[in-house]
Image 1 (cartoon, rainbow, N blue to C red):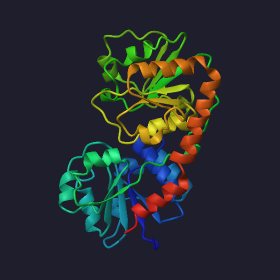
Image 2 (cartoon, rainbow, N blue to C red):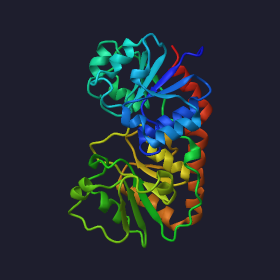
Image 3 (cartoon, rainbow, N blue to C red):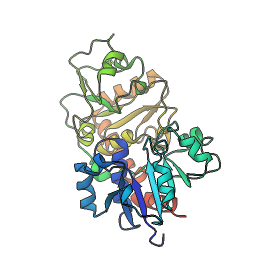
Image 4 (tube, rainbow, N blue to C red):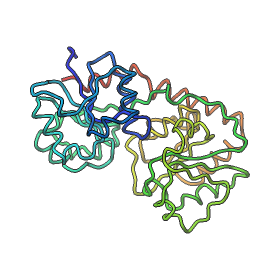
Length: 337
């Protein structure tokens, strides 16, 4: 890439999908292209985790106002909701930088479609064909690349399960659209003796959504970030992830993180999961409730098979989904002009 600098607009961190993605991407690209992180604002610039991460990686950190006109290079902005509506994208362009944009979601952000029509976006990145199909019309005529997501396996080590009780659960943002209307019954009707159900993140909106249900002692409903994601996922035998009918996953970061720790994924069809999981070998992609029930019951009853599936899920995620060399090749090509 001839030493052309790449400015990452965002905040690296250890909590949340976008901040974790930036952290892992910086590790992936460090030493292969000149990098600098530009904080979205003063509070983010002083964020303790961000400063520690960047200090350890020896990557410069600054604010947009610190950049000089004619700086040159490329700015990569990821999942910053007000990147266009706030005028930030225009300010980067006025400094002479090319703009690479990665939305991460299944819907355009405020001002995103207008920016694409005006030619403000030089390249758009998609995490999956599934997402690209949804947003392609928004970015008609804009150069695009498919990058997927890189999850650093070092942050999600494999855990040999020794749970006193068979444990199922899920991790996602606290969004009622992420949950099926029958969510608690979905788990309980599996009819698993002495099973535990662990969920993170949970909030008042979800309490309200399921006020019709009495959660018994087998449930543990944790607020966001009560535990580190790796620790939480390492406590689950099975990552059971039914989704609400109003949501489509663009990729499935939590599923891959779960696999890396050895939690066996049991997920629905109709998302990107079929591209991440080999059904019956590294997890299960189910069409109807009976399939969920049969798979989970067998995992519950057959401990040797469950341990085998756990190891296979982790190996698949580490060696195939999270192959650093392949991800680095894709990202360097996506950021090159």
